Amino acid sequence: MNSKSIPYVEQRSIYEVCSTIKGLRKATEKEQTSAQYGSQFNSRFQQPASQQYQQTNQYQQNQQYQTAQQQPAQRTSAGACRELNERYPVSGSCDRYIECINGTSEEKTCPDGLRFNPNVNFNVYPCQYPNEVSCLERSALQPAQPTEQCPHQFGYYKIGDARNCSGFRTCVNGVGFDFVCPEGLAWSSESYRCEWPDEVADCDAEAFLGFRCPEVPQTKELGPPAGFRYYRSDANCQKYFLCIEGRPRILSCGSDAAFDDLTTSCVSADQVSACPAELRATAAAARESEKQLLAKELEFDGKSFGKSKRRF
Image (cartoon, rainbow, N blue to C red; front, side, top):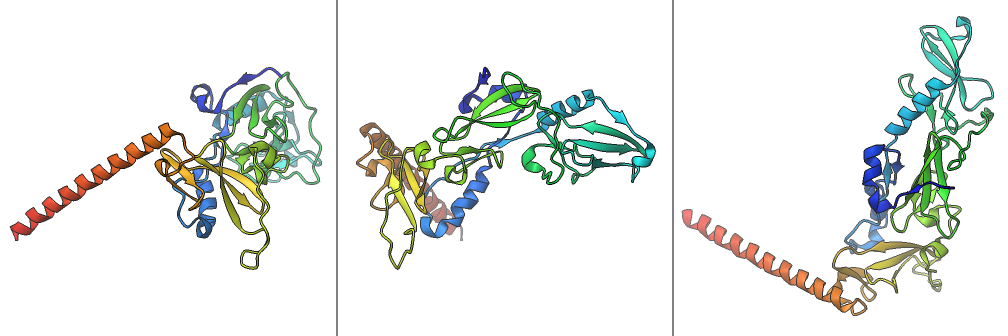
């Protein structure tokens, strides 16, 4: 399929054209996950696990509404309305519904790829993505309207296989736009979000991250699977793998910091011999600069305290 591929770090231009993406889960949600592991982490890690890419759907909703307006509407008798203003599904259909306005009913069809949600308020556009709607017994759908780029006019679709889990495509009116999850996260076709790879059913976390958690003998203290384990990345001293129940996740220490195997925590990179000399030198200079700044602040506070004391 030919579509415009847009790397994650260069998304700003496409946002200015159209906010087509709901995106990745907010960093706060991942921070809450990190906080859940707080007792094991012991506040040693200086950076949230990862930031998830949050998406906005205003543009999609506008496009969906315009597309829906172009769908042929079928008027039915006013007697079909149970209330003056309401919507309810067509029997057996997941994307067709009856809309009543002032007692006059019309049968409408959601844009291809979307589903009718009878549970939203009347002032909310009722056609939503499949992950937001449970159709249950009303499973009938309109025929798909695929394009060269998209299997349906609207939707989010995974790109790649179990070893390459980070790519996904959003389709708006049959036009596809490709995106990539933040490093270490995988696209979930179930939640329509970027998740930890071990939480995505069709992603092989070990193959995707290029790391297999070493087996740890069972102990009475830790119990199977021997709790949490941390391992520095061989490729980058600033990154490390967190193994939970034998499944890996990759995290980063951040600027001028590196993962120390001895303390299993993030420290200044100049204290980690596995880091490149240039990074160690940069980290050492940054640490020295911080010390000098702190000394000046303490000196200033001391002088200020002395002046205020003389006033009394």
